[in-house]
Amino acid sequence: MQIPMRLFRSQRPASRVSMLGVIAVLALFVTGEIAEAQEPDVIIVGAGLAGLSTAYRLNKAGKSFLILEQTPHIGGRIRTAAYPEQVGAEVGLEEFWADNPSLEIFNELKIPMEKSATAFSSFLYQGKLMAFTQEANQEFLGSLFSKEEMARYIKWDLKMAELYKQLYSQPIDSDLMKLKEVSFADWVRKTGGLSKKVQEFIRIESEPEYGTSWESISALEGIADWHIFSGKGTGSFHVVGGNQQAALAIADHIGKDRILLNQQVTNIQSLPNGVIVTATDTADFKQHVYHAKYVVTTVPLFRLYEIQFDPPLSAERNQAIKTQTWGSYFTAHVILDAKASRFWTVNGESVLPILSDGPLGVIYGGNQEASQSQTPAQSTLLNLLITGDHAERFNARTGDMDAIRSTLLEEFDKLWPGFRQEVKKIVFYRYHPRAIASWPVGRSRFDALSDSMRNPQGRVYFAGDFTEGTHSDGAAYSAIRVVQDILKRDKNASVENRQQN
Image (cartoon, rainbow, N blue to C red; front, side):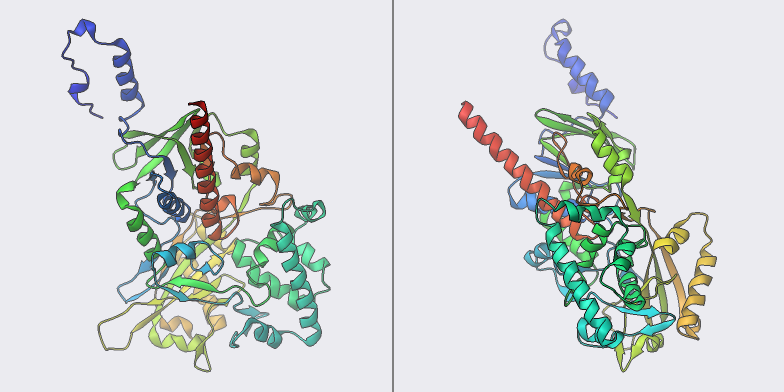
């Protein structure tokens, strides 16, 4: 780092230079580059959906901000791949459920959206494809279950909807909180008198949402996640041209000049009247020091251990992070000859997505890029979102990619004989093992430990989907939470200052 020589020169004789001034400059020299004179109200760590949503809402409220992003990418897990074959697919976040507050931002920015899928999907049960070809969820369920099974399922589902409402009523009933002490799987088996087939349906439909086994999560978590399937189900949306377009549109709106990439935050110091954030530029390893009134971290909770906090994270927050578990994802894009679409077409309609309940994970369709050519598309794409134990195995850096390819092709040939002859290439994307948040038996997103992560520590706020739940709506809700609190805090401080003056 070079400091301009003018900082060390004075028009006065050297003997009269303030020693305090020299010490201050030397301190900056040791800790990093001098922060910009224009200090933002809030520093946001992470340019994923939570960080972008926080910045959008702060900007709307007239507050200044600066986003520090560790990677060279805007959008976090929102990533869209495009291929020379004029096909593409999501690498990360696949869809936005209809109750996601992010859709409010997309509508305000006039980001084009398309209806994606309903809550339920076609799925494999005992090796047989249960194709969703009906117009509505209830019709689909009626084709799967007997009248008695359907009656018991509806009664159970109504109970789930009522319990979900109670979860978001404060305070939560103590008897309901006890359900965090049993697994979702055990609770489903012991309630509602559901048949084995209905139980398996619930398991297969819900496990991809939390990326792990239903044996591993508490019943409270299962209830919280089931709400997207209750009743008529929750619809979902996809951004036209790929979800990454939404992240870029938000960035354009708030100003890309206020998003600094390749900035790895290493230290956060919370003072009575502000915060000091130190970051290392991963391109040249220069340190930069930033000052603000508040800092909002939007990184997954386990990544908080990559940052030194002063004062340190409280014991309660440490416990919350250490006892939170996770779900796993692994993505494979299978590029095929266009005629391969016959495999997943029933009566002229696609039955995708399909829940394979195996190594193929959730089989989604890809995006067909618009082409100026009148020639019919030569290629199509399947997007495999693989979860749970299979994702853990495929994500292992010791795993052989050729072996993964062989496993997937074998599974495809079991499902659709002759499928592998249509495959042109497969592209793999590995995730960090802790892809999404999960709460095991004994924990819940509604318990006191989780509450501690939703409360600020001094001037440090914790946001992101890992503070709220397993879906991207958690990122959006966390942004609303922290921005509302910051605005309220500033308003109260202004009132106090006026009263004192």
